[in-house]
Image (cartoon, rainbow, N blue to C red; front, side):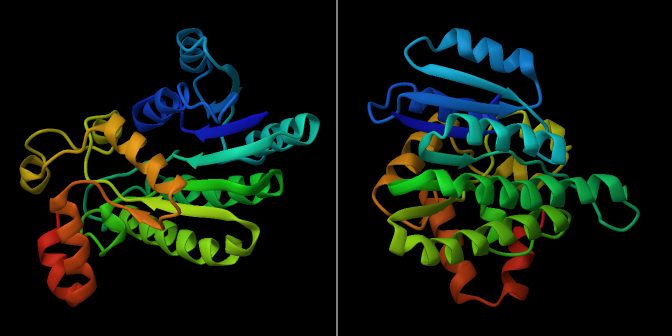
Amino acid sequence: MYTAVITGASSGLGAEFLKVLSVKKDVDEIWIIARRADRLEKLKDKYKSKNIVCIPADITNEEGLDSYRLLLADRKPNIKYLINNAGCGRIGEFYGSDSADQCAMVELNCRALTAVTAITLPYMKSFSGVLNVCSIAGFVPNPYMTVYSSTKAYILSFSRALRFELKKRGINVLAVCPGPMKTEFLPKAGIEKGVSKAFDQLPYCEPYSVAKNALNALDKGHAVYTPRSFYKFYRLLAKVLPHSVVMHLSKV
């Protein structure tokens, strides 16, 4: 029996990954992790075609990680997919910002993702995959999303290096780097209409399409998936132009 694990599964892109996995024939069981137990239970009731295991946990603290670690040790699942989707962001100038908010991004986006991956990998075999939700912000530092873009650069680098290490084990690692999507992430990050002209003008990505195509790219052995031609071009610019130049385009 094959198991998929999704962090940050209660809403947004995480819920879309669940929707895609609910019809995949190579997955029998899906573990969904998030802090909001009521949201997880509603999702479990929605998808009856799979055995869904709800894990209400805060993966930024050791208690939450321990509950996941103990469940793995008890059930010893054969994990086909690990989807590290949990993340948060914040827009605004770093100078004068709330230190707790800034550090929370590092805790969730970097530390928790790293911990969950390390805990999960011993339960993954050949032809399995790790999917890390990154962002176009990972390509170039983004002024006014300074810490967020830095955490996404970490995820991109982590994904590439880990993929190199795990090739010999037959485990692929993919970083999915979408642009903005209409999910809970934006208002929580303080990104409302009119707050940033750049965000108002950017083309948005469709969450279900991102989830479906990212999983397909993972299955095909790709290292990075970036949706939409606009963001593929931005990714190219980030490779060929100095970051000092591209930062003027990426500032929000």
